[in-house]
Every structure is written in structure tokens, then in C-alpha cells.
Image (cartoon, rainbow, N blue to C red; front, side):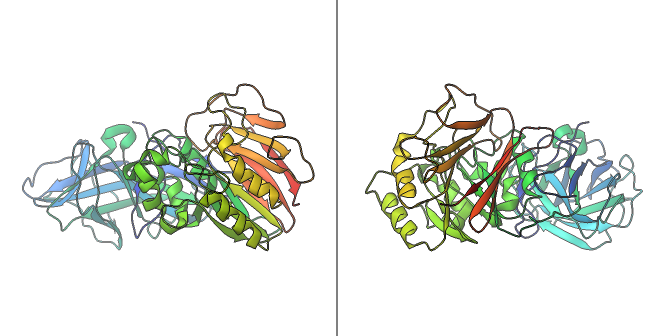
Length: 459
């Protein structure tokens, strides 16, 4: 049966929603790092039920916790080939599609018995759930992934058993290892990352990120080993920016980096009226509620996140705010990002000329870098003025960074001053922000080789 690398998620207490995608053992890149993530499927899983004391459920496609009737579930994993210190171990389970969910997903404990039989375990001879409590899953809905941090139990190679119970009479049903790709997973991460030698701030991100595919899982794995602040250039989740999509697609992948993420919204986020899914998911990290533009400082840099889904015209509230914000900044270097690109060579979406007033305000205030998404490609432009002319003295270097996980687009007519392009690689765009300069690097996901890097000076 197959197994797929799970979509890790931001931890909220002991559990968070996640969704699965493809891979097995991944060495992640982007910094000098020795971290690795390996995903293991169960070697055994089953459940027992108190009103069918002699029945074995080892071949069932589901495992269950419940308190009416009482059902307990058991999982066993064999971890091998792991080297280095274990920095994280997550037990991940997917709720079945044919159930309404439950307000209690179960309490999980370690077990000392690692030899119980999947094919022979019944209520009458069940192993003891006798170890330390590892965590609990709260409310679950149908067809979603959930996780429990089991790092305290999984410390290296070996065989590990987990047992789960519930005191709630509304049972929680999970796919078993017999379900194939939706089988439970134990995801073990080892090693540590190496911070930038300079110690300067890092800003890393991309746009056009999460859907039902596997690209966002791979780009989220890059972030596991790149320290710093995470940005997004919109279309955080597809196709409509609903709360359910954020929980099912974004939360399990990029969501595990939510606490350090400073997002911007895209048009797909606004497919939900008022982008309420986006604003409710990110909360204060998306700036003042419902507005979608804000700023912050990183070292010697002033960073601005803007909203290209609302008015950007000269004199608009956003444009006037931007000018006042830039004028008030005391930082020598400035970077901005939003969704729709003013310059792009992709054949899917034409340049968004309505964004020009924002670019003009940045240019007038000697900003240095601007990053966009929308087109699912990577493209780098030479420094340009607001009319698209090459301007080495004051122009902003711009990037289209839309390779976060959604399906790739293609290029059409190559626009003036386009210096680097790729339409096949997923990856993230990493900036190291020095006192008066910056380094950029396109970091590809595992298995892809495209790269682009360079250095620029602040104005």
C-alpha cells in the first residue's frame, strides 16, 4: 500500500488539521542544514469494541475511538534509517469522508507493548494503554488530517506503539493503513538548521500556494529549514479562500509556519466574500481586520504588505496610507509585496497596470525591491521605474514569485528587462537583508535543480 508525505501543520495545542501529499524521505534545502524528514506508515493498526469482545477489526479500513460503545484504537510504527537527533515526531491521522466528525478526536498515549497482533487483537485480549499521555485531538470534521506531537516518545530508530481512547459518545473515525494513501503517518524530523552566517534577517516566501496537490507540501518542507520571517504573495489557498480550504490545504503545509508568516491576499482569497476565510485564518498577522495592507521592520529594512484586490488608485486610502507609511520610515532599505504583478511575461495573466500607483509611491520614496505572485512562475526583472524603463539608479528590482504549489503557468512574450525565468520548478524566494544591501535566492524543492541568486544594494 502507498504512503505519502503528510502536509505538516501549525500546532494549535496538541493538534492541527493536515492533508496528505507525495514523497517518502526528503532532504530539505535552502540553507546549510542537516535536517531531514522521513515519513513512516504503520506496520499495524486496529481498534477494539466493548460490545463485540471477540471480534478483530485488523482488516478494517477505519480505526475508531468512541465511548458509546467503547472503542479504543492502536497503532504501531517501525522507525528505521533515521540518523541524528530527533527534533520532531508527529502522528498524523485522516478522518474518513463518510462521517460527520466529532467534538473529540481522542486522547493518545504511549504503549510499552510493541508486539500486539493486528490480526489477533480483540477487546478481550487488548494490550494495555499504559504509557505517558502524548496529546489529544479536539474537534474533527470529515475528510481532514489531524496530528499529535509524539516527540517525547519517538527518540530515534525503533518500534513504537500508540493507543487512543475517548470519553465522548460521538466517535471519531480515521482511515486505517488498509485505506492506502490516506493511511496514518508518523513523520520524523532530525537535525538542525544553520542560520545565515551574517546573522542578518531573512525574509522568505512565495505566492499561489495551497491546493489539493503536492507542490505546497514540498515548498513548506523548504521552510522547515529556512529561518526568518515568511511572506506570501497572495492566493494562499485554492480555489475560493474558504475556511474549509484553509483548514484542509494551507494549515497542514504552510500553516505550520503561521506564527512567523506575514501574508498578503490574492484574488482567490477574495473569492470568499470579503476574504473572510483569509482574515479569520491569519487574524492580526494580516494587519488591521479586513484592510489587507500593513508594514513592519526587519533589521535595517522596512517591509510593506499591500492589497491589490482593493482600490490602489492615486488618492485611494491604500495609496495615501502607503505614502505616509514610507515617509515615516527611518529604515534605509524598503521591500514591498502584493499579489498582482505590474510586470510579468506569463501568458496567463497580463500585467496589472492598476497597481502602478503603488509602484510609483514606492519609487518616489526610494524603495528597493517589490515581489508579486498571481502568475504561477518565477521571474526576475532588472531595476525599473514605474513606466517599465531600466533604471539602475533608483529603479526597484521586481520578482514574480508564484511557484508556491499551485499548477504552473507558461510564458508568452518576454517583457523588457526580464532577466531570469522558470515555469517548471516549485520553490521559495529567500532574501537575506543586510544593513545596506540584500541577497536573493530562488530555492527549489527537493528533486528540482533550477536556481537563481544575486545581490543588490539599497538606494
